[in-house]
Image 1 (spheres, rainbow, N blue to C red):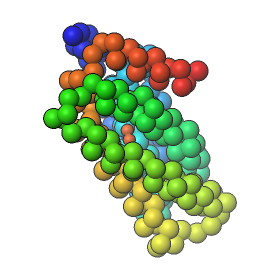
Image 2: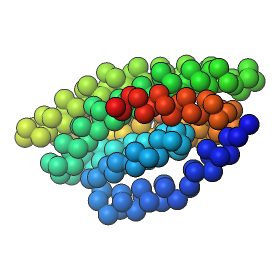
Image 3: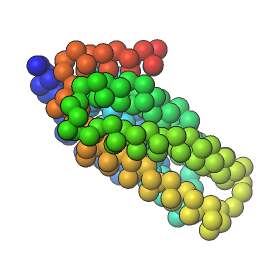
Length: 192
Ligand SMILES: [Fe+2]
Ligand SMILES: [Fe+2]
């Protein structure tokens, strides 16, 4: 198995780079290099970093701060890249893990939980983007809306932490070169 040739591209400093961008512009969500998709697990990891940036912006909004351009980009991110990432996981990544993991990994239960959270996210994102569009139109933030936004930010962070801590390490151990290439190809096709 030649997993290391794929995983050797997974430079841990990507997260640090994302963090420094985050500090430079707290309202920004930096796009990953398209070339990174050849290392699909690392690409998923970088998407999780972008989701963390989105969660930070949601926290800023929940705290009463506002930046028109940042909120517009956040809405765009939630409606496009966030949704594409969920499709990557549901349609490509999860099925490959189910195929390649032995029963003792108990991956099916974890995937069931994550897929259930994705389903709930769909409805929540519709509500959150409606709220954000309302704020852009001049509506005022109230306590209930602030709590809803903060709750979604916390949920994003919890979901990606679980995927980073459990799912990605299992994938690095279980997906062989062929599976990683298939995953990379499917993710590329979704972005054509
Ligand atoms: Fe997910
Ligand atoms: Fe994810």
